Amino acid sequence: MTFKTIRNIDVKNKRVLLRADLNVPAKDGVVTDTTRIDRLKPTIDALTAAGAKVIILSHFGRPKGVTPEFSLRFIVPALEKSWGHDVDFADDCIGADVEKIIGDLQAGEILLLENVRFHAGEEKNDPAFTAALAKLGDIYVNDAFSAAHRAHSSTEGLAHHLPTAAGLLMEAELNALNAALESPERPVAAIVGGAKISTKLELLGNLVEKADLLILGGGMANTFLHAMGVDMKKSLCEHDMAEQAREIIEKAVDRRCDLILPVDGVWATAFAANAEHGACDMESIPDGTMVLDVGPASVEMLKKRLLDVKTIVWNGPLGAFEIEPFDAGTVALAKFVADHTDLGTFVSVAGGGDTVAALEHAGVIDNFTYISTAGGAFLEWMEGKTLPGVAALSVNKKAA
Image 1 (cartoon, rainbow, N blue to C red):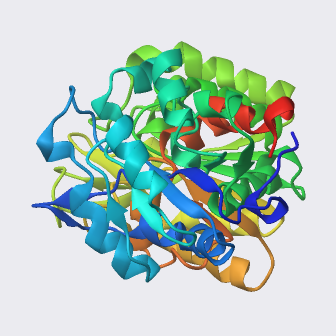
Image 2 (tube, one colour):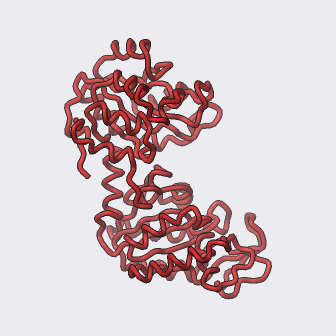
Image 3 (cartoon, rainbow, N blue to C red):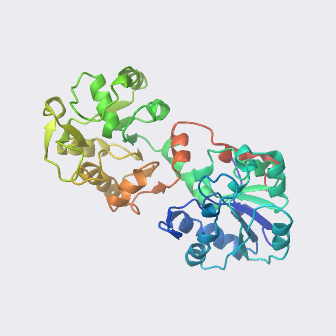
């Protein structure tokens, strides 16, 4: 797929509708994690420096109509602090009042519009609502990969009304993902953890097609081990998914994808910090206990296997990383991948679900080649699905 970015277009004195994802963590009216905001700064800097009139569209939460607690007004101070630019705010995202405010906007200025989800037409991709948004701009720039799996007015519909380009964050995300699975340097290893395989069947099915090694951890690995006849005792395990697990094992064999499971684990008597625990082979889990992490022998095995690969895609922790000492496996492997990424051995891309939190916990968030904060969009991309917001960037007749 080919598409233009803001590097390729003239935005001087143009009204640029910039779709951002400002659906950030917040508590008591204060942003608690500015990662998504900070990552937008290169696009903001580029547009303002080029003389664009920047008009930002975003959602926040899941409001039912106009809901004050979901207003985006509270986020303005965090934007100004991160970006180093003044940011004005409009109390709606369509209508005559908003059009007047935009009419007074000067080159290089920034305006944040109110939550697009205050209007039911946004999530319905309603033509009338999309047209009302399109009236506000001359160019549409999508910099919200994390919302690209939704075919909403502000993520997909606008691309059919205005000249369209990708922002620098969207460009970086797509380049990283393409390098990880679409045209990677091989061999490719996919590390997939988390609690359940029932929510990741499509993901696993796609990865055995594209990866050379598929490494499983967490509760997901327990289900596969159970499917192979291992007694997982009290461990988290989807017993009713055994047949699906066996099908994935067979598919991996057919596709010559080496599916790797833990050879040992860390058991505990309870799902609690510093509960009585120990290491054991997976065939020897003590009665009345549960496996909460991969064991030290598994970590060493995985390190050796990964030394042969060139590209690593990571989604999901290997154990209950939120609880010590059951974070040890995830932390050890994350540091290994990070160290070898720094050495230039690996291209490493990670994202989705608890992955970012796990890598932050391990202290390696800045050492991977690319960390996606996209969540659902990252997972759908790993599942091999077409993302509406990405596909819309290649609407040729409207390319900027």
